[in-house]
Image (cartoon, rainbow, N blue to C red; front, side, top):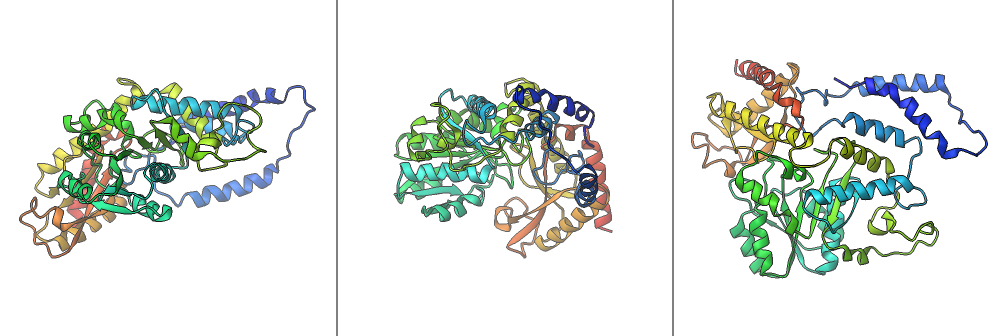
Length: 449
């Protein structure tokens, strides 16, 4: 399940860093090897209490193992433990971060930008919403009811008025509901989600930008989950139109630690207008003295940040650049193809009820039953039985009101219904689809006995 051969080269690569101290007196830190061995044996024992996240039969939550080159580059960087707050303590890794972030900006069609890495999508969205509150002071932020819950929570933290906008039957922001909210006035920013975390739905960004053209509002694209799918070659035309519109937004968040093959936590926030740097200005006379170039700590809310994250992302982009038609793009297309093929299997099998055709690589479905209560109960049982058979799924809850028109034969005796959910982040899932289907079928047969 784990790639181990490349670990053999790590010692030699660490030796390659020794020249940093050339000319200095010899110094080798002491290491309690026996003590380390004993503690690491305990670590291995404790870490066994996990699911096999790296295996293709794990199709549950949004977990994707880091690429071997990311894992190795991250580990190598820890020998120095650079801090990308300032160039003084993160010289090489700061430059690598700037290059890696510029590569991400180009993914969305931006040559001019301001951006940096951070701990993940939550902090990246915090910064984007904070900048929005500075540019559009005192004005509301709107996001769909399917947007990530952190937007509402972060607005509370920042003291910004927040309003939810209802979604349509596809889990996308409803344009009529949005127009009504805009007509109420005092709106500063609309958050467009490109890849909701429950359904993988993509808001109609091109139409949101049409509204923006006639109004004094900002558009923030939360593409933490789905951002990389701008490279995907088998999107629906409607979804493709949304991604092609990304160049027109004011800010973008994307998480390399999701589809970008990076270790946690690695998020990225990008601003199209570099002049928003004015809102980050602060004094630190003991920090930014080693260079007149821009220090990354001068354009972010975080102070100390791991340079290792930047080194890992840079290395991965060197091996697998984010370009149309490249291996990275092909892998994304395979992930979506897996979701589509399983959706079609489920749709033509009378044991199942399907919800929405997946826009990206997230699929939600349920076992066929005559009531919401029984669907929920069977979903939980299938989830447990599949895990015992080595197939690891996830569960989610959807409002019954969103499914009533589609599942007319179901008695809606509950406000919410529990369903099965899978995220196909690994390109290898496509090769394992028959095995996934067989194990799911076995779990379903066992559940209804």
